[in-house]
Image 1: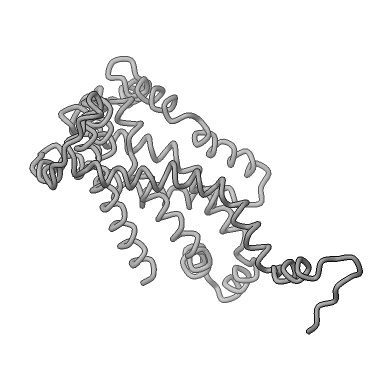
Image 2: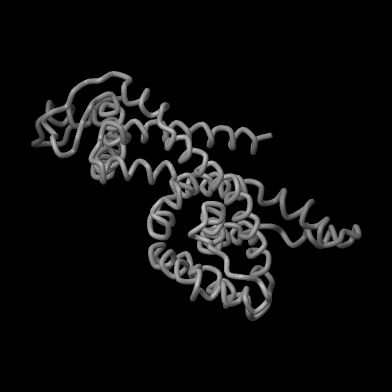
Length: 307
């Protein structure tokens, strides 16, 4: 196809400009518009991961930033010889294994409850979702008072039914379970809203057909609701699992990792070594191992969901 050159225009310049196609211009514009986001992504996500991996092979104290010494696998050897690490790993796994199914189950129940076409449904959504938008620090402080051994509302309620005061956060056997209960109460509203969005997309015709076939409430839930929201369920399970592994604020505010390290988690241990003891190298090793644990757990969960 011949290039038409208008009168008075430079043929060489016109031909050079004509070679830049519309598709190429769009790619250039796309890259330019993406640069700010890519810069932020690299600065606050990719670069910290790279530095954590590099520092995990060093003896690096935050108080002496210029005295970095390469130590090889010493931090990892020290980590796997640290009893506190295995305690923190056990606590993290215990929290995750209990919170994920319980929280998702409660969230699905609440979503079905507020999905009913009744006047109080919208009020229920606000009521169940309000703890999610409240600061976790505020919620943790509030529940610390509720769990108080002598003056807590929960113990007063138990006394009314003839049950003696419970230590809750002061007991190594009850502290983590108390945090689990509070965490489910606080975060279930978030998963509820996601489930609710999925329930809105389930065709009413499926329920009508199930009723014609004589299905009861459980059969409709099992054969209609669950298969229709399976993708939403998978998404909720994965994000809940990742959030559960990141447990930090609750034990930090409510128990400071105690009593007897019963609520110390991997993220708490990472923070403690990195920001309190200033041992950046060791905390970086914890961060790398923590990343691998979450990655493996997510892959296992994804495989289970596919099956």
